[in-house]
Length: 116
Image 1 (tube, one colour):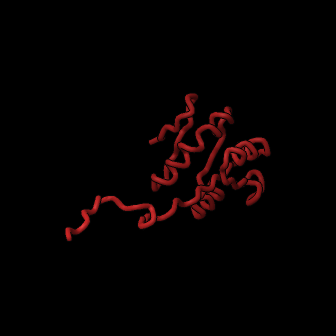
Image 2 (cartoon, rainbow, N blue to C red):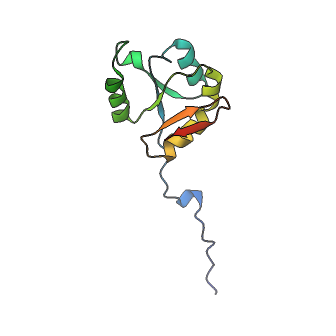
Image 3 (tube, rainbow, N blue to C red):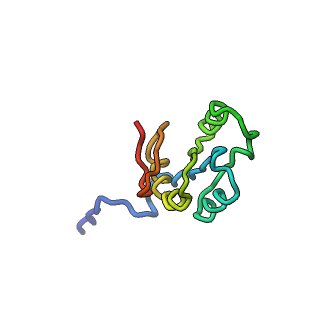
């Protein structure tokens, strides 16, 4: 009897790939409002607020270090909240695939643009 030829691809049941790490977004003081946080959470994001961890006016170096230690993706001022919420899927993909640290700007098109 002839041996069955393998297709070379793994089935999902036998896959050894790790599940995707969850992404947590951290909103700085300029975005730390109920309307922004609610819009992001309604879009499915896990969100940490600056004011849940630090008083307003905390120096950037302090909260940025904390965000870095926790692996949080920092979101800062964007006048167009819909653009930001609409970009969550792209931002999440970048956060999962790019080791960072990095800075991206969300342009009028809603497309994240890496700032070098």
